[in-house]
Image 1 (tube, helix red, strand yellow):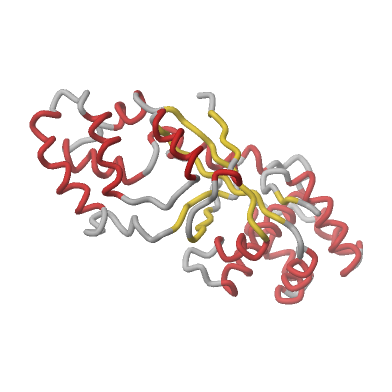
Image 2: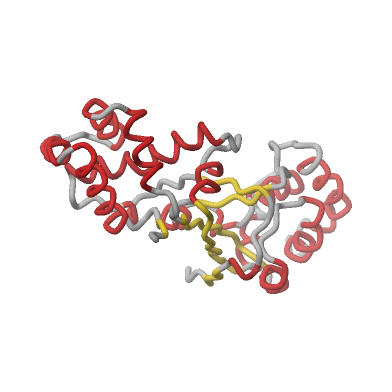
Length: 260
């Protein structure tokens, strides 16, 4: 059965075309190809004018049964951290556990001696204190799009919370250069079931809402591509997020050293 890789629209797009043609007729494909929507949102709206949204999403969900979906997690790690991931898997973020890595990296900052006694306070504020939003929710965050992930900040500086802690300590973004210098970028990919992917596409982990968002995520670029065959998701910077409760076992991970 198909493992759906979001960026590979030339593969799953053909499959989706067949499903829609068989269920709703080739006239739908013909009409979509003759429109020239300016953007993806207009393409999706045009598709839903041709086919009722509820009926189309139910058809897509039923046709996807048995599929797995690939997700991508990007970050920067110390050598000891990637070794831990190989042993234990990808675990939800715990801010207090980032103390050793941050000290190892930020000790190279010229102002380190004047702020090193504030590290524990910064960790508390950005962990349980939720100073820059909720960071500890027992989830692993990933992207449906590898291409979008490459365009995001995770591979440049790593976990967003580290940047917030650096700014809290130094009062500027000078720590970001060290986060980049002393770590290496990795992309970790793993497959999840269709229902887990649907649930993960809603940040509230609500299945019904996730089902709508997941179907829109596929149908929108597919509809646009019918009118613009040259369109590729792999050239886009969009980074649709996924939120997976719990961790990912090491045997489920494919670890890629990202070449900058």
